[in-house]
Length: 117
Image (cartoon, rainbow, N blue to C red; front, side):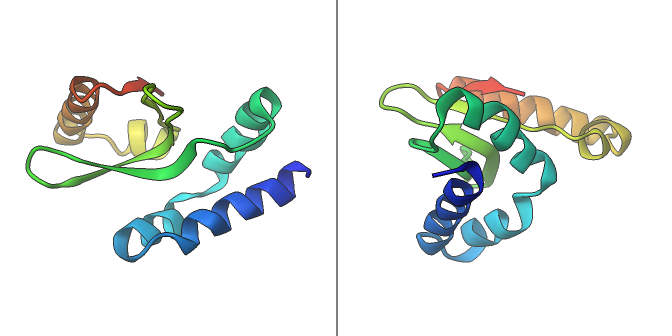
């Protein structure tokens, strides 16, 4: 199976198993940068999407959802990938958004996730 076929199966499988905001985040959030990561980094390294979860939801201590671009969860390992674009993470960032981003990543580390961004 080539990349395009595998990617289509991967996304369709995850869309079929989701509802509500979890499905909406995948429909809205899986864009060009996220797909380029899969095509140019993930696929050449792994040649499959096993144990990879797009737009992975993590609930914080208040019950609010955080969505990581990808989670790689092969057994006890909890690895999150964040594909950070310039606009959302630099150009449009103010002090409050920066503080929230730091708190988010600190929380994820505290929950045992390793975050790669």
